[in-house]
Image 1 (cartoon, rainbow, N blue to C red):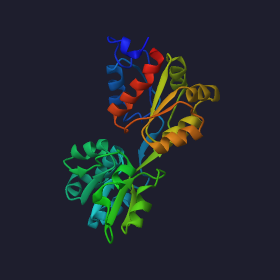
Image 2: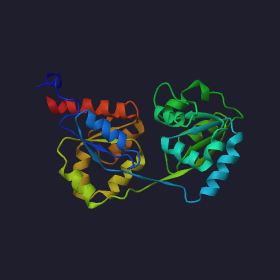
Image 3: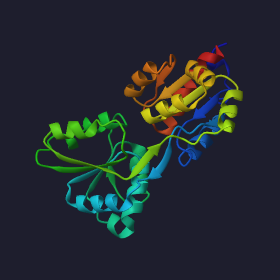
Image 4: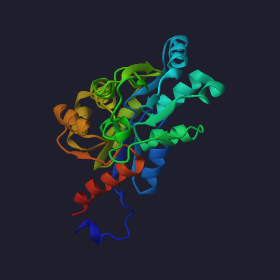
Length: 264
């Protein structure tokens, strides 16, 4: 029976949606998954923490206020940056750019208007915008965490910009327990995992027990960028699907399309 023959089923009914966002960021996505009828399973793929030397990061941020643009790469970059600066300093920032709409909204919650890409909600989408076309002699600060995919800085330097990356938080391996593993192992199939960063993939592939990892890799995976499609396939995932962005709505919409195959 086709998915369209289930008009009264919520779009994710019968699926276990594996939410891999950090524990501090997962609640809204889990709530949204449940609202669509899913069983939401928390499996944090990273742990978010401030940088070890906050004073060094704070001084770098204050020194970078003379830049033309600040590019924020994630909502966590926004939160940790503004925590370091304090409200008074945060009120006098350079023009802000956000890698995606989620980051743009995080800035707006602090009263900061930011430009975000109109198309793809990622680094490639931001680089495609005319606002980042001619940058000769411009100074740009990228607010992020160490270890992320460094696409922005090289591309901006090729366009003539002076670029400084300022790390304001860290992505660390998650603190997973036997309870996390048991919850995943006992979750009803199909599993559909939502992943929005390479660090999450790598950390979970390292942390999960071998048998459970093999099961996980056979299930559907929804990712937020073409880069992650290739990286997931290289790690052994065979059922990988590309969402429009890392926004909760786009991830869950894609999960709904994946689930429709299981209702045939």
